[in-house]
Image (spheres, helix red, strand yellow):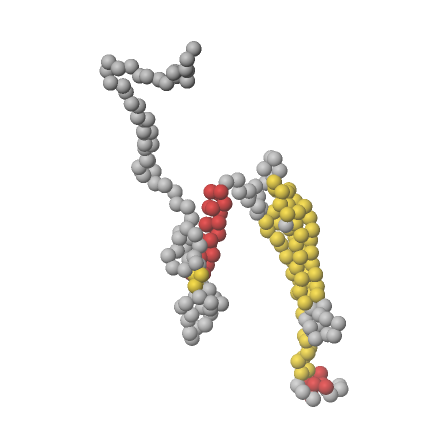
Length: 208
């Protein structure tokens, strides 16, 4: 996807979406597996925050299978009594939902990032292990976004890595505002009363 923002705030997106799958039973072929490819390519023009839907990725798949009793299912005429054949057909229609946002300020980008980050943490916190016998209580959980104190644990087992930098915190409204300090005045030397300041002249002591 290649987005472009116009002067009026509209978002122009050049979209290319592809969905592929391997045909069952072709993985062991000498010439290689067979792949089904579905793709769409289009250009759309939407407003900021507007949801668009792209469709047209339709797939029809057919399959069949045979289950039989060994030896008895291969007997002519009466082998059908020991053999079960099934056929199935599935139709898939893939819809792509897109909702572009224009991040005009750094604060807007931070708010959207924090919202998605919190959503991922809530999904991880509410995860329940499907194993009924042994519950996995040490499920991974993302650290909070506000400057974690403990470092991350590297899953590769090479030790801990530093945690992320803390997000900039806003200054409270009742926080004291530092006042500017007055600039020091330069010191001037005053002559004693009754005396006149003497200045040296380049012509002093030179004869006429």
